[in-house]
Amino acid sequence: MAFRLPSIRRATSISSSKRTNVPKGYLAVYVGDNLRRFVIPISYLNQPLFQELLNQAEEEFGYDHPNGHLTIPCSEDEFQNISSRLNGL
Image 1 (tube, helix red, strand yellow):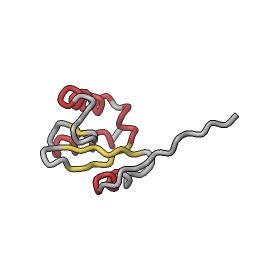
Image 2 (cartoon, one colour; image 1 turned 30 degrees about the vertical axis):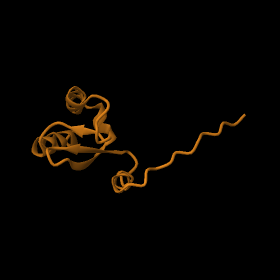
Image 3 (cartoon, one colour; image 1 turned 45 degrees about the vertical axis):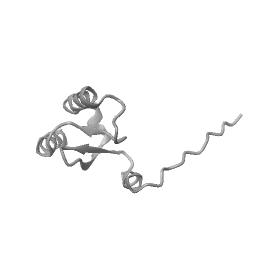
């Protein structure tokens, strides 16, 4: 017996088209006051350092962020520093 899943429709806004430019195995996050977009490997999700950033995001924004995307509450410089540390692992 085969199951047919309903098709998923994409929104037709400019911001959603940006989200589709994320390669398989990566995740887009938004960082800093200007909400700069970073595309990071999903392997970061397993790292305790990045999990702490996710916990901070949950505390600040909860699970229902008004912009509908994952926002990390730290400065761009701090995020780039953490990202470079994670790349070295």
